[in-house]
Image (tube, rainbow, N blue to C red):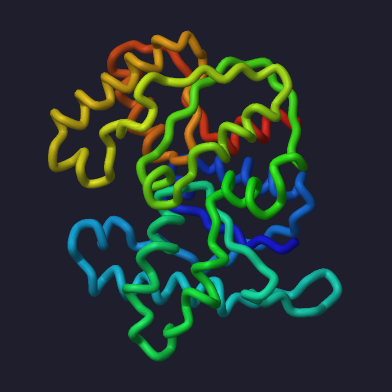
Length: 257
């Protein structure tokens, strides 16, 4: 199975271990992983701020970065993205949702991208979604002594309908205890530019999420979006909360070490 890795900005710039963990997990599950180096931001910050024209240009570039990818393999053949057989996988529900939910409306009126949904966006998956729906969650297992709670990111939960997938994966890790956060479907307060425009509300929402997390007694807060983790980890440091915040790809990678 061939996977073309989609690395969002937050991961690329701030959490490279998440990308490394994603590659490790995918290879462990038997995937050949390729990285289109011309990929950039998915355009979500521009789109959410109302800069539709700029977001459209970014979307076109991002599609081209994957669909026009070419690289020689070890046998001298050329690897190209093929929608009929290949997948694009990213460790971010938020950014995957941007591509899958909004790219078709943004660029499909351009003749060059009229079939972008069939040939590209329908092949884009968030990591845990890909493992559950394409590879099969029963093919993953690991071992790690840890107590964790899982935070549902808004885009993953509401745009991609990802709820059970990460939890089923965590339950496949021997020695790991999963404790649910009260009101786990409530936003953490980040929301991209929301946290900039409404900082007081954003901080209050983060504090509430951290209080609910503390009530579980778990040591690690796990999520599939680094933006949520960055927000909550930053607030925890300011308030002196000694907890670990980890992307699910990192936890999975540790469990198969």
